[in-house]
Amino acid sequence: MIGTFLTEAPATVEKITASDTMTKLWNAIITSFTKMWEIIAVNMPQVGNFFADYWIFIFPFILAIFFICFKMFEKLLGAAC
Image (cartoon, rainbow, N blue to C red; front, side, top):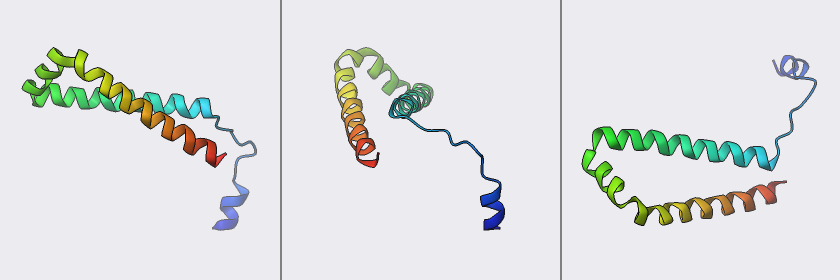
């Protein structure tokens, strides 16, 4: 079984760059936030209305959390390479 796995390995290996990783991470975060927002807006309209009314005050905190996560991820990515 291990021999079969090793002989059927692809000849070329695709290299993953930090830029590709950050792009995929950003797309995953946006997708998950969009899906969470759809769930909140459909199932909890009061919460959706609260965010719709006061998003300008909440948005900087959400943005700060994203930037902190990105910085942590970049540091981890730099240590792994």
